[in-house]
Length: 238
Image (tube, rainbow, N blue to C red):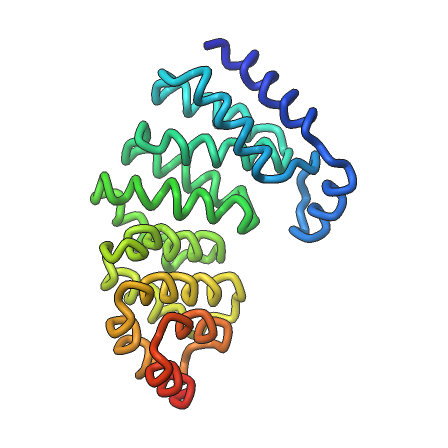
């Protein structure tokens, strides 16, 4: 694989699918400092799926080099493509790649990229390489709100399946319940909501004594899968 050639092909594919009017709106909506082509996410996914189909044997080093090359140009769609490529090829990542992933998360500055990286890339990596989970402890107290959000969302997929480390999530969430940052508040509620779909009583018992500390944004999401009685009790406790 010639990295520069493949990057040029991906960029050309993205530009060909651009919707200029969408670019202006999306840039304003995301409050983004990046250039935007205006490519809908399903179209970016199609481009990335094409890369995987044509290069199924992309190894670890080639994957990392391609991701870094895509990311190096400050274009929103190129960075989304890099995140989605890591998602599709996440089984090739190893614990040491947490350094790269942290760099990308710090540089992303938007939920539109952070959430893919945190939930769909960091999450599975931490499941496969438990030693990497220690990094999440540091992230959970980081000054960067996107890194704190990432610590929470990295636990999402396993908890959604009815598995995962709920105790770890609870430690993080308990320390962040007084957060003023909207995107952190939303992340706590999101993970609690998805966890409660399979284990509502567990979430209810954790949330009830903390209802007075949790934000409205957090509670509105968290109580959605609870029974009417549980929901009423939590909201009344606030």
